[in-house]
Image (tube, rainbow, N blue to C red; front, side, top):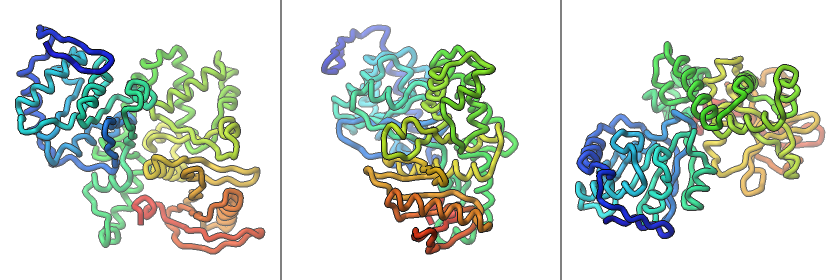
Length: 442
């Protein structure tokens, strides 16, 4: 008999026909290790290993979570035990069956005391958390990923009770996008390849940043994105939450795609829909939450001194990918703002992000670290008109005075420089940064 030694739930397992076929498992392991990983491209997501805790990689569907694991594995595949729980070999599987998988690996590689274990699509196994806890109790290093319809941050926290650190993998940054295109942008190459980089930025803004879309021919990019959107709605929301008012959900998605980088509130949506649909504010709030937890949209809070003000103020809505905006009303200025939002979330995963608004002015992004406002960012693709320039600068100066922050930026399409500005008794130095340089950290 084998015993799965989880402290609170010891399971005695008889050797029986219900166990996995160890021969098939060994073949699976060897075939995986013999794969050609040479074309797997690295991603920028950095994770910190903490003893006794699993690393959970979550994120939107098709963002590249599996290939992220491959990018870690590629340099020394045999050191890793990678298990794709959606592979037929592991179906049906129970937590106790994982003993067979570990034994199969050990018999193939007795020189390694313990493999680094990577569990992909872990939600396919009922009570999957038992496997993870067992491995952590045995001091294994564990990575896990799951479908965005099944593995959310709150579920990782609930199932593993503080024994995991969760990271979110987004679609490609512009730096990753260029690398996927085989283009060098570093050092002098930035200037040599500037025209090509600029052209690819247009593509990045229009079609978005999903890895498969980035590598696909332009003739099929839109088809792929449409399928992503359909699957996201069907599997991540309709099936998961057993939605009854499908029409309302479709209307909310349609509204989101057409209203990205704009303000939204439950009250305004209720007024919009109540004349045509039988709907409540609670249902609208729930459906918005479903869209947000599936990574279809993000709802940015307003920066307010009081918690109540942050909760009750209208949110600003952003899409997970600007490619989806082609199914609504494509707008260059809003695409740029949406891309800046996503990049800020990538760069500052532990920071808080807000927008700021006064009766007369607004600032697109307020970056807060450890309770202190660290950066104010305005997005304006063109500052050539004096009226626009004055409006954007005045908003930054006003926010700078109220929030005690001196790091002020305007991100534009092409203009670059730094200006000392004084208006209505307020002073500040404002950096003007072209989007292409800001995205590439120049």
